[in-house]
Image (cartoon, rainbow, N blue to C red):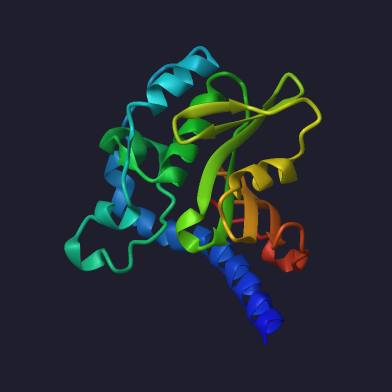
Length: 199
């Protein structure tokens, strides 16, 4: 029975991460007023870290534009302009803003989301490579991994302190494309779930 429950939870995690892209796409209709916000100019990884430090971590539901939306407003991936304009968001807000700022340096950042048990331990970071080495922005903190580290090593690092890895994904925040999606640590999912949505 325990194995059956673990199996159900892992597939629920996959569905959650996959559906969040579409869910966020709908909720972003309330954020169009922020798209005119000019992002700060950065010239180094340290300057990206400095800009991210100006953001305050805040639960998504507290950022809902209306009180009646708070029960629905969970884990929405906002526009980076929204994050910068409000100066508040949760971990995925830090990540998408970091990805947008890295683009100024000619670097491509990705949204790495790890769904953990208990769910309160779940986290999202900005993942990128530079000079052959893996880096992440863990909220506002720049973390450099050892040479030879892999994406799964990063997932393991983010899972420290949790009971288990339910599912994880690597997404392109510019296109909404899911590049990697796994049940548990490395379990496979159908390719049909790796869909693309224009954002």
